[in-house]
Length: 141
Figure 1 (cartoon, rainbow, N blue to C red):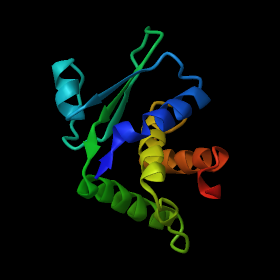
Figure 2 (cartoon, helix red, strand yellow):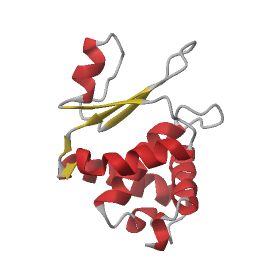
Figure 3 (cartoon, rainbow, N blue to C red):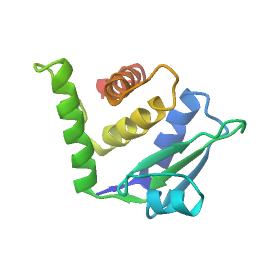
Figure 4 (cartoon, one colour):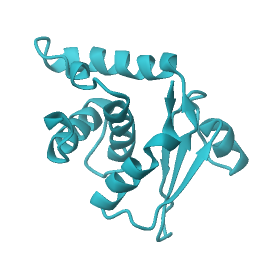
C-alpha cells in the first residue's frame, strides 16, 4: 500500500518542475468516484492519479487516491512490463521502479504525459515518463 499523502512534498516538487504551479491537489478515497461527482468521465475504477486539465481554465487539479493498494500498483507495473516488452525485450523498465517514491512518480508522470499534445498512446507516455524521471534524478538514488 502506498500512502500518497506521505509523498505530497515529492508530488509538489514534480509539479513545480513542470511549471504546474497553479495545481490544486486533492487526496481522495476513490479517484473515479470523485470524477463522477464532478461530472468528469473516468472509466477506470482503480485510477490512482488523475490530472484534470480543463480547456480555458488557468489551473488544473491533481486528484490522488489516499491509499493505493499494492494490487493496483502491481497492475499498473505489469501493464508497463507488457508495453515495455513490445519495444525492448532486453530491458525491463519496471525494474527501475524499486521504491514507492519512484512508482508514484511514474504513475503521476505517465498520467501527465497523456495530457501532452504529442503523446498519443501509453507506450509514448511511458517513454516520456521515464525520460523525465531520469532528468529529475530518480535513477541516481
